[in-house]
Length: 545
Image 1 (cartoon, rainbow, N blue to C red):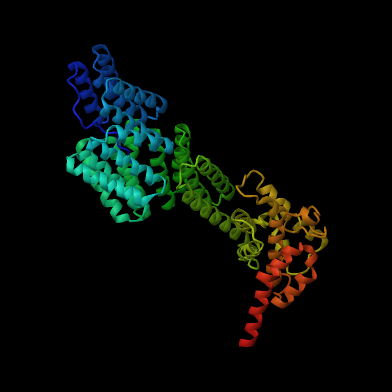
Image 2: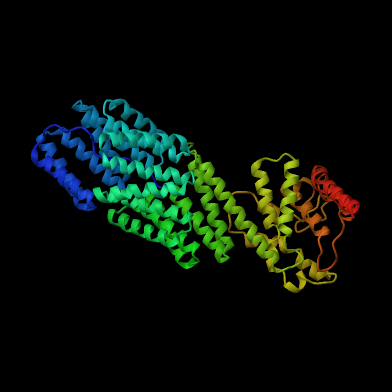
């Protein structure tokens, strides 16, 4: 969701300006409220020229700040920051603390939108120090600190700050400030999954935004409300709101917010089965996010498009996009300023697991004998990995690798894969190619985890008698050994086209006979958490019978 930062007008009266410059600022504000942004920019630029000529520094500082806000809404970030910094300097030169604080507050809001959160916090606190005597400014800074807390996942702090600012705006009779506060209360309510509260707040904000003519805030209300409507599965209402938001952002020339609106529309189309339209809208979202330089928007749109490709059965493309999103989220994480990126990465990894699991199941679906095999292998391999004390990343690698270890079997002819009798030597040579074919299938997919060794080497044996590369001993990665022993156990204990299922006792005896196929540590961990519990369960069943 996109927060509404408060770039609003200063609360105190300006000193009496040269009328022409003041009139231009007034005209610019009227055009800005009406969404006529190019005309508003022209008026602010003319006001700056007139104020400079007349030496009216209070008007100059405000015109610079207002122009900076419009430039930033149009994604002209460097120009916007330069204008805001100049407004701050002008205000300091004339000793106007309130205007200087206003410039800092606007600059902080820009830094929030750009993801520069620590700088934003410092800037807001400087604004608060300069303008603490003004209740209106304090309310806006409190609002913006709430936005910062909201983005970083500190929802309790965000709710408190939004509530405080709303109370202050009401006391001061600032209707527009109330609209911004309502919007942001809607946003934090949605993050808390209080969806009815979120809808109510967005409705209250939109009503005021339309009354006062704030086009930017109208767009934010409609877009963020659309996300809530998606969560409530009211898809047509969501699409209507997102398209209204898109039209408003297009009017304002705001590419970053257009990207978010396209993302929401794409999600609606995906959820209602219109996958080609979903792909188109999400591609547009990614392109706009890249052009805007919005890493977060690009990552989120990439994740949503991956789900479209999953629904289309385009699993390799889905994984490539999830990998791209994973890298983007970790680019944010590397800055150490987006605390809530952990939650986004966790959500992404859950999506990744779902895509991989579904792909593994789709491969198995052609063989009634092996359906569910990858899931069981993943469960047992996970237990072995945890018994060996592997870290979270290694455990995730093994879990995902287990789901994809047999992906190369899609190239094995059906008549060989499901042959009821013993395979000929030539047929077995074809089967032995599936790890190589799996690697070929995934050659262009760059995984965040090192899955490819599992796919290629899960049939290697510690004594060098495995395939496809006849690796020996510790040449075989630990992850491949773990998935390999879990794979053998499941193959032995399930019915196959060429034989019936073995009992747990028979399977454990066979694995013990072949214990030199894996390292002693892997064999012992397997016996502890899989083999021995399976034997005990089988014995309990016999006693019960």
